[in-house]
Image (cartoon, rainbow, N blue to C red; front, top):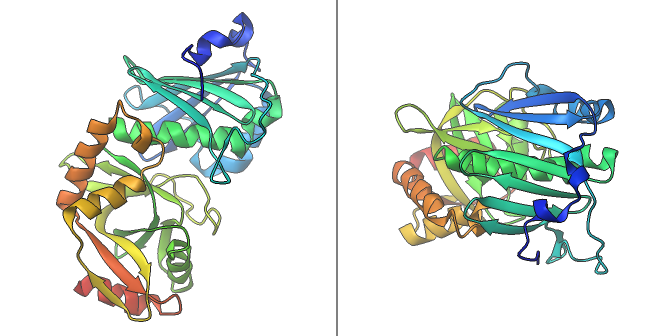
Length: 307
């Protein structure tokens, strides 16, 4: 675990030194993520990975600024210090104002109050722009950006049919990627088989949009700015018989919360997360979808729409 001292106090004074004078901005889910202090090499790496989300415009209301700079990192004797259940897991320490983060090749401070901004640093210029650092940091920032707007960064598969988004949640191996692959094969649009952003519109109704993070299927959605009204939330379970049914309200809440990475372990933002989940589930209650992986999407969607 991190010690009580803030990470931003542990690094040397040189932490303010940028890698270069370049900057880049990404736009998805009606949110802008601006990174400053980048080198040319870092910009090229980010452009190659997140090209469709790059934007040349900014919004003063919905822009989250991150300064990227040089800074020394601690030396660890335990090579598994960033591993939980054999999964790479950056260390986080939460406080009332935000959180400190430490992972492979980087440290970061994400301030949430009084205004939302970040500081990301490390010792390796190229590593900071690679997915193991840049994407992990961006996922965290995106999760808090959604929550601050009464929305959710939801680990889920998102399928669009007739202009509406259907979201599928479940444990690893439950079938999120299988359903997404079936949707692509049958000509339906897929937001992502990995994660989606849910944000309320002006009327408070939730809409789902893609994030630029590739799941097992890769980067299947080419429009990072489109969003769709949420038509249904389903918890996936494999079964020999195709069927759909309801579930207790407490179980809906618990399962949806389990699929909200990063923010669902933050004790300082727990009340906000709970309120958002209750608002979402009040509009679109979660149901259970039982299916076989060899069933056609048309049969699955017919069952869903009749549920």
